[in-house]
Image (cartoon, rainbow, N blue to C red; front, top):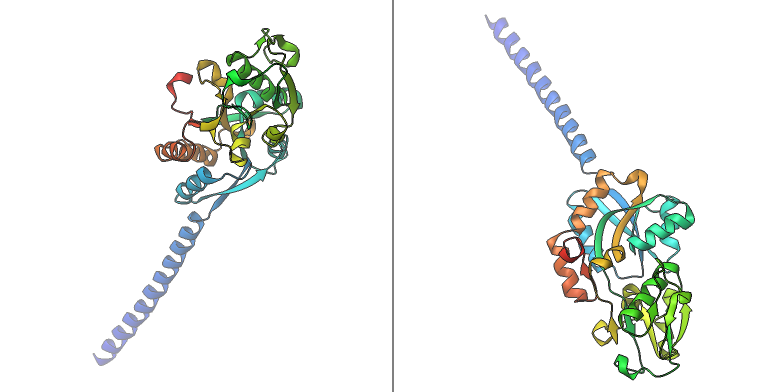
Length: 283
């Protein structure tokens, strides 16, 4: 009988050891699984300039989903699409639909928009005048020289009543059919338009360039009107076509197109940049 008690104790001891060992393996396995699921996915996004306030908030939202945003800053409008096409970045967020479509045609790329961000009206700025009526005969106006932004800037001058254009789909200086004040139209690299304000009477400046130059849109001489015709000028988050259904990139778009981000646009930019994803006038 005593031997049986001793044997039972030994069996219980062995079972306890086995149970403890098994528990350790199970917990270790669970720990490995949790670690794998917590792995952070980094998404490289190309932007123009250095204003990353909106993206910082998007990054905070995404980190809760184990996605981290790494911003890559560019200073030339030709760089972000080249980098995207070559796989140096995963997405970019700097261009309008119009610019993207024109880029694809001229560079034979397959870049697509996967989500609207904002529409940023161009504006006419000046250090010499405060209203359109102060423009004089022969005054010089600078505008961006890339095809898309030049056409948009010329359309702005037409809507301001300064010139008239023919019906070219993508206007150039040759599209001007009426210029009553004989304004001198100078074409500059987009990044130089703000810097030219000391040399010209006025300059048509992109919102991003204006922001980097600390230009106040409330003091602009004239601001582009937003209407249904402005749809080609909506800014988008872009990807290579093969990645348009990437589930991680879709989460990036969803985090961006949030009420929180919409409120930040109003806080930081007022009317100079307006969230486009829920703007009814563009539907």
